[in-house]
Length: 99
Image (cartoon, rainbow, N blue to C red; front, side, top):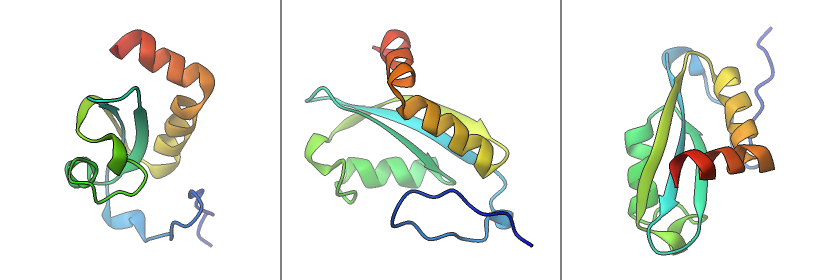
């Protein structure tokens, strides 16, 4: 039996066996005080989506600079890190290390 996948609301589970690496990334708006943290299996494509305004959540804040990208072997590891970084203490860590 497959393990349950912890996904944000509105996201569909996919078969991740074909995706050996996962990435947690943070981008910062160059025009406003806005930091976004995300998880993906293809960070180049995902950041391009943010930069070109294809992502509804981040479109009003473009353009962005990349603060960091972290690599993980499994999606659950990456999701745990993403959740931490989205917490209050995680956002403070980002601000103190990358601003």
